[in-house]
Amino acid sequence: MKVLFVCVQGLSSAIVVSSLKKQAKKENIDMDILAVSIREFEKEIENGCNLAVIAPQVMHKYDYLSKISNERGIPCVLVDKDIYGPRSGMKLLNMVIKAIG
Image (cartoon, rainbow, N blue to C red; front, side, top):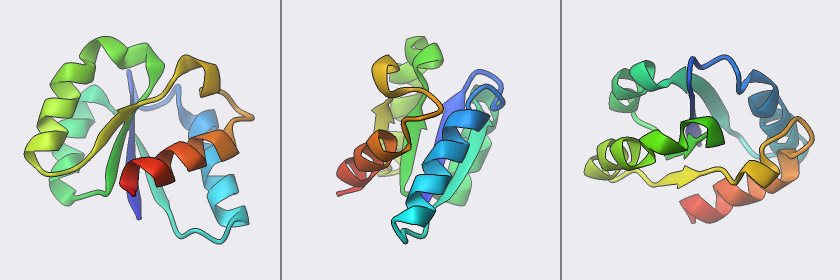
């Protein structure tokens, strides 16, 4: 499963992405998670993915990003700011699994 995690520069989400990766590994779920900037998103989504996850700090771009994602048949979800943190791996993993179905 491949997940694109979108934030402003692709850097600020590194800790959150690390937490999600650790939890997926702990649960024996094969998940490739790539943190990307808004600009990189347009290019990376062309390489294919199962889900686009939008960080709270770019929620103002959600409509734009979800349109790009939906045009390719890829679900797009916005992370709730209450579960966006370094110790939220399990909550994020549950969100990802639910979004992918």
